[in-house]
View 1: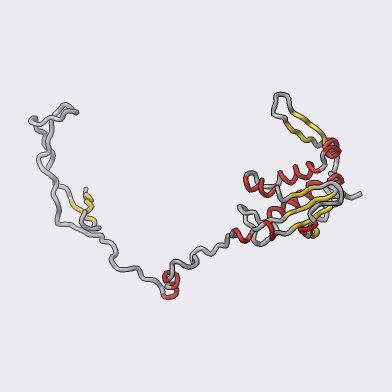
View 2: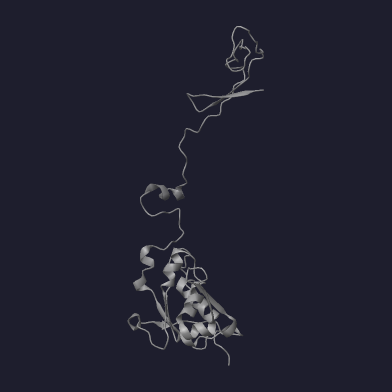
Length: 234
């Protein structure tokens, strides 16, 4: 069986054959661990007549002429990675769009999904899952939002005070009379990412009861709604 020996002076590989002389055991030398003595009578031969070398490439790598410009200036723009990723200047909050939507007789779930799409920025061509690219959304007349079926009496909202037995349960109708803004906030929050990005995106939602809001200076525009079934049918 051949033996491969790595040369230290060069990057070549030497392939040799060991000698056929067997190992002989001598009682003169004893090993302290095994309890019996043995000694190698001879060492394997250094080389045999059969030697082959595998040497590394010493010449410089050839670069095609059409790609030479990629290696001339390594301090310039990254020509290898052409995937666009938004910079800090691409998602400044002061330059984002503000939308306003009237929640009167609009289905809660369909309205919340439309709001979440624009808050995340999924309607934009520059949407990036890990970056806040969306807009701000203002919701007015939150107390007039509608639900379908028997959800007004069957849909439950739970909250806990943190103490034993502190679970509080109330229906949609009860919460709408007490804090109507919380219904839309709860629905939109569940459609946003969970974590630091989701908490930051949730601040883009502004919900108010009544037709008025204090964001006239931002010049909000009407929220574009493509869902034709968002309005509750009489």
